Image 1 (spheres, rainbow, N blue to C red):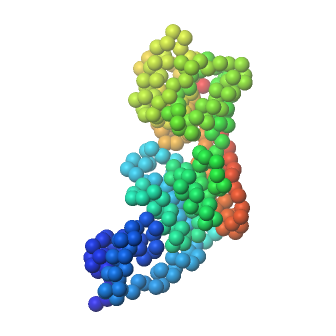
Image 2: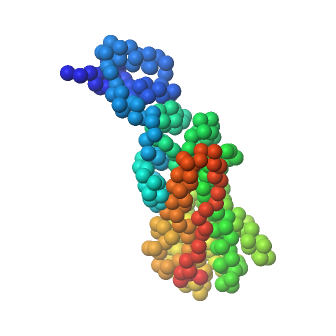
Image 3: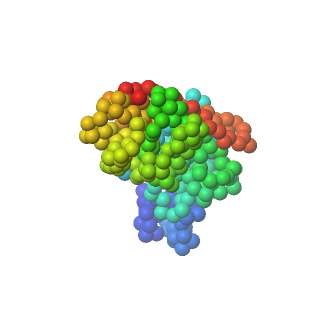
Length: 335
């Protein structure tokens, strides 16, 4: 009966995944563990599947999509699936497959990326912005490995990335409200450290100022982007003596809470107060009345990333740092 990787793991007193990592030269396995695994391999005369190992070191026609896949990821980051679909639609046209890789279970910093780079088990990486870090960036750049980051990485580097212009989305929101006669406005955003929220807020406030309208500090509210906080923020704004004529919510989750507060206050949309939010997905379609939305086609952003990935494989020296997908306005019944 042939010796298997399970036999080696049992002999060495480790898991089969640890044996696999040792065989594929993962740098995150301790020298002592590595030595113990090799001793077990020699003792049992285990011979790895040479075909499989060699395959992992050749052109694979496979692109890895790297991201965090923790519980409730679909709710915390609802756009990720559309982005993946867009990326796959482009790379599949060129004969590539795409593998989804979770980094949330890494036991050591950069463990997954170290494995992918050392084993060359893919031809390129498409990395969701939530999964990038300076440590990962350094490893990718050092090996000049083909990659595209979805979203600006949030720090200066020679990484290749594509993103949508969230500041422009904020500008469009302000312009739409002003053009419809609403100048006394409030903005409910995410946390101050949330880069996407910050960019939308920056574009919104800057455009308001450009048109001669000042948004007071007490009309800009920061939250952790929950329905309850959207409700409480709106309730607070509506209780002010000089309540705003319109409210702009940075995302759908906040929008649900905000609309509940407006309804509870007995106000009519848009006669008593105007309302605008960002992103047509996932919740804006269930809000009644249908809100005016500044939307970003994230499927297109994924497709742009896939297209750039193919170009990078053809020309590894290509540096891509680009805002690609343009936000658009969907007029609803709230402005």
